[in-house]
Structures are given as C-alpha cells and as structure tokens.
Length: 347
Image (cartoon, rainbow, N blue to C red; front, side, top):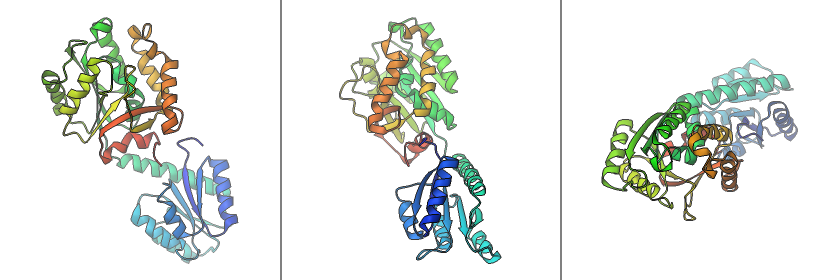
C-alpha cells in the first residue's frame, strides 16, 4: 500500500455492503480501507486510524449515521463525510445536508460515483489540512559544508515541500576537508535547491569551540531567524567539531521549542535516536543535494549514493518504509509534526 494512499473509514451494519465498498475503493481508487459495523465502533476506530474520508450508512443500530456525523463534525469539522442510504427521499437528503455531509449517495451504489466522490473529497480535505497547518521555521546547523545534507537532507526536502521556511547555518567553510571557496559554493548550490537561506561562518575547521564565541554566533542567527525547529549534530560523535557544535547549539537554542540531533558518518555507537523520520519520497532529493558537493564525493565513501541509501534503509527497520533519517530528540513540541505529517510517518 503506498504511504500516501487515501485512507477511508467505511461504516455500515450490512457486512456485504461494507465489503463491496471496501473492495471497490481498494481496487479502483487504491485506498486503504478500514471497516466499522456501526457508529459507536467507528468512533472507537478513530482512536487508532485517521481517515481522509468517512463513508457511512444512515440507518444503523445504536449510533446511527447522522448521529455519527454530528460527532465527527464536533471532533474534526474539516473531515469529509459521505452519507449513503437505501431510502431515496428528500427528507433523508435534507437531514444529511443539515448535518453537514459533504456528499449524499443512494443505494445500490453507483461505483463510479463513489470512487469519484471519495477521490475528490480526499484531495479537498488534504488541501484544507495543508493550508491550515502552521508553517515551521527550520534552522539546520552543521559544523562543515554538507553536514546537514548528510544528516537531514531528506527531512529538509520534506520541509521544503511543506512550504516551511528553511535556514542552514554552517559554522566553518571546511578548509581542512578541501578548498574552502569551492565548498562554500557547493553549499550555496544545495541551499538554492532547497530554497533555503544560507549562513556560512568562518570558524576554524577542527578547532570549533562548544562555548563562548560559537554560542554567540548561533544565538545571533537564532535571534534573526526565530526558528521553531532546530536540527544539529549529536554529542555522540567522534569528530570534535561535531560535538562542539552540538553543545553550543543546545545552549544557544534553549528557548526553541523543538531541537533534534541528526546522525553523521562519524557518529559513535552511543548515537541513540528516538524519532525515525520516513523519507521514502525524499531520498532521491537527498541524493541530489549531496551531488552538489562534488569536491567531496570523490574522496568520501559515505557520500556515495549506495552508502547513503543503505544507511537510510538500515534505519527503516525501526521506522518502517524503505528510507529513514534518525533523530535524537532533545526537546519536542506539538509543532514538530509538520513535515512528519507530510512524510506520512504517523497514522
């Protein structure tokens, strides 16, 4: 089942009708369909399944379709609901419309009309949800050029797709790892591909401090950008610059709601992620970002596409899908779900 497949909850006390609707939607619209035998069971299902659309019968024992519709509207006013009934009458249609149903279908169902209605309402509902989602302001911090792309390139691509504002802060130009001028131009190319703002500072490569001057540099950017989400190095890393940047970032972003640490190729076995972000749709974009760093790809095995893909595939054993970027979460707020919702991590 594709991870962006339309998710439909079908509610009908007639098991034959429910199975028919499920089969039609799965085969003709590629939907993920969950069944409930009455309104009360549907409400219980919503605790573990988040549908894009609900398709419900009207006449059911216990909580009927119109009562269910009223509860759905109270819980989530924007959730599209299709009401179906075997009784073709103005009274039923008016009752359904007054209860704010998005579509009214009569039995026996016209399969083409059912598929069209579900497909249309899924698209409309997702568009409304995306339009109403608060935009994140993302700050990704790395010690050297290419650090953030290696760690969270896929997640940054997801943030870009979601319309979030992205800033990359690179604290050195990476002179010990190659020509500093070339590496800065490579960083600019990657940032442009993401539509991101780029700050490149000139701290001495391999001599970055975890306090004082580094903290102040990061605080200046934080004050200007006002991020809601920050990604940075993990302290569980063999590279001294990475550890220093992690320490300085955590101090400088103490008032930011969400801070998470990404994995680098020099991370130690003590790197222990607590969030696994699916980047199935964004792995290709991540590989294209890393292609920008041509001065490094010839000498750094960890930048090879096969290595990057294998690493993302390994972490999928914990997060599902086929590609994952792992994060150690330092602090987390409800707003952190933005890009993760886009990647379909959570149901």
